[in-house]
Length: 284
Image 1 (tube, rainbow, N blue to C red):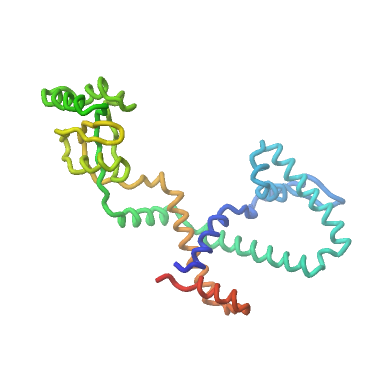
Image 2: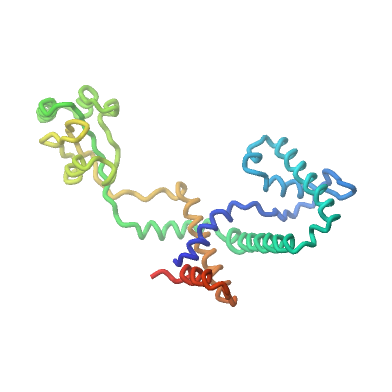
């Protein structure tokens, strides 16, 4: 992905959160207020609510409606004065209006051709593809008994050799906060435990108990491996939203690529042209 495409993909995150007009087909769009005879309809209020400042968007519904209505009224009464002074005819205003219009058309086109086209089946298919490409990762489920001295650890190893239950010994003698769970650490991958602990536990087999205590910064560990497995992928429901963002990004990037290929783009400023061309180089 080129740097320019990366910038565009980053912008996508913001675009997906933009509130666009609902364009609802509901024929019931009552007038809720008038300003000098100009009607303000429910659809106008809904649009204003969708574009409230995030802080105001946290207000109760009736307060949000009031804030939105006030925003509409304030904007319209001031706009009348601005038009009277012909501020809408200035070059600066027209340039800003063109920019806003292009941005909103971009957002509307994006919503129609990207956001609204993504299906659950498409997201699930992308999830399956990503899961299939994941390299296998080993996980270990282990218990441990943590004590302060090597002599204590040796005594525990002896008791285990005599047939004592590991979990019960952990509850009775471990200094680790998880002692109430019988020293159960659950499943973990490499990189989640201290190196000295991992160096031993990942070489052990299911059912093995350490014959020698493992020393770490926390003390001396006696370890039992309960299970070893290939780590399962995250459940679809847990990552569905993230996968959907990937699908949206890819569709958006394809849309941008097609649109740019059909346009004659010329950057006249030499310094900016150099930056643009460098950013638009395909990644090697």
